[in-house]
Image (cartoon, rainbow, N blue to C red; front, side):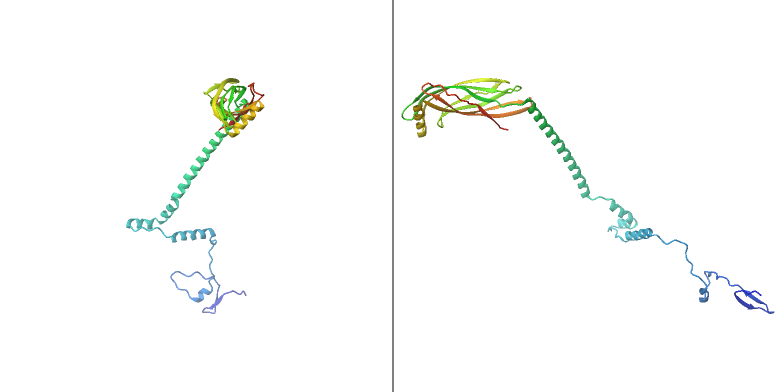
Length: 298
């Protein structure tokens, strides 16, 4: 005799009906359910997967954007438009650029332009300096000069009152140009003859030009009369006459100018300073060397 699970219910005539246990059906929407029925109902789980974190973050960001205050306008038409198009207005605020950003762009462009200009100028200056250096090294310019080639004391008269009554000197001066590729112009030339710091004559010359590798002789006769000497000068003159050797000093300068390679102009002040001693009463000069020294004047 087989046994069946479930509840038995007697029927008339002694027949027992076995009722099998069935799963409870879900309640109908309109019918109320009893508490006993809920005991046999198992909880129903949805087959959906749990929501991802990205969707949660997107939902949170959308909620934050909805909570941001929208710019309000007191005028009627604009207020309604701002309410309906709040999201679009927020995006337009992010797309609008501040004027300070435009200024930064302009300042950056100006900086780049200035950097390019200064770089080009520096390159040009460097090329010019290199070219000048090459010209100087190739041509090797030399400074012109003045030189006293010969001198003679023609006349000398001195009285006991300390006055140089008469003195005459003859000088042969040469302006020399030692450059092989450039002519030199001389100007503002002046020579001073003196005895013991007392100037007795001044010699000058008009501007002139000396050709390359050339010289120009300049002959001077420098007379002087009635030149009073101070106490130290009188003592020096008396000592010189007693020894038979009278010294005179020659000082002067001239401005020279020439071009190196036909492009670079060079200016020099050539200066002359020397002492020439003469035998007296012979009047001839002792051996001497009197040349000028060139000094740059850029």
